[in-house]
Length: 119
Length: 243
Image (cartoon, rainbow over all chains, first blue to last red; front, side, top):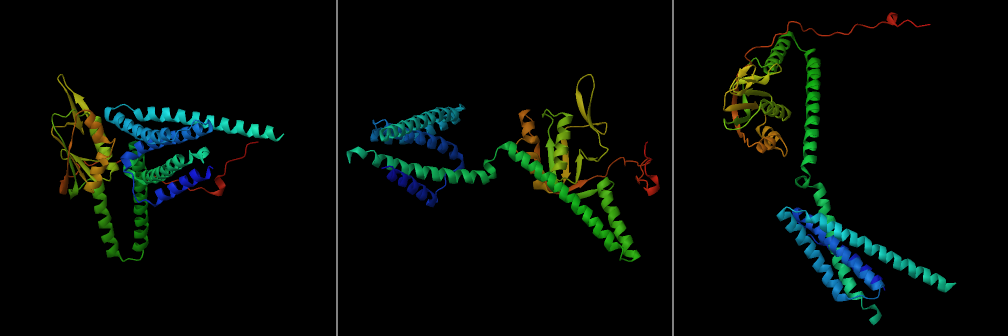
């Protein structure tokens, strides 16, 4: 059941590597924040699947809106002389690790339950 | 089927994430190899390192040339030897500053209104030497190993002095060498021109294909100099063993 998204990720990476489009070097910084935000959304989505309250619309809107807003805020911060880039990295970084920890807990609990059932 | 209704949106998101990751990886690789995206401090360190390396290599070329010449001269006749000696003497006179020189170079003009200290003049001269200048004059005073750049003051103000002579404004510094290299040496990020701009001093840089430089006014004297020759060591001069 996880194979389809995994294939999607691999297919996306392959498509990305064949695209000749290059992000202009000055925008790479904003792209990295957008990537962090979208990674956070994806992990949040996986977490919600494991918690059994997944909503596709929330995932899709969060994925694109978070990425766009994070990049936009970082850009605005640069224009105004406030380093919002670091704020975004910190905020999404913390959320990302929280999501990862939650996913790990979920998998461990599931694994232990299954082992106890087998006994 | 309803059980796995998360698969479609998650797959879509994973595809986009894959494209994002791939593009970002490529861009990051591009930045790593792009000089224009490096940090200023790193670039300065790179330039310094490279110019030091270049100087070492230039010295090596000079050494090898001298070796080559000495080898060649051993096969030449007396007239050729004299010719080579004269040519070497001419080169030496360029270096000691005893002749008038002409060539391409850079002119740096510092106006009256610019707040310049003697240390800034020293910094400019040092940067010019580092950028490959072969001869430098400040207000037509040739700079050599014995030149003194300092300051003096009277009751009213402070003056910069070159060889204990008061420096009049506008200060015109001329340097012979590759004009582009000399300009880049001064204008590299974080360099002397950037530093002076912080103090509202903006020297005017002008490249020239024909600069004339006067010789050194007071030629240095070498009365007490003599070459050091290490004493020859023989087996008999071994240190006595202590009991």
